[in-house]
Length: 93
Figure (spheres, rainbow, N blue to C red):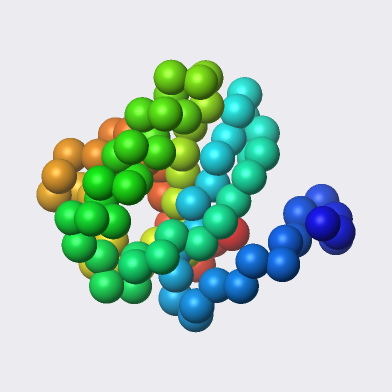
């Protein structure tokens, strides 16, 4: 990986519009990857996020989202995960 401007870039390609899952430990971003299916979210996507958030929390970390669309944010709010998953405001990050 190459670090440019303090950000790591990987060879992982993402489809345009996919949200980015961010794993942070101690307030430091340690990994990020595209959330497949986030452009047309369903309960399978929410299940993945909930499991990731639980695992991260058990290991002392946290999961956040970058570039999450309104449908995904609404579904996260609807199922009650909005207090577990931190999402950047649209246009940030």
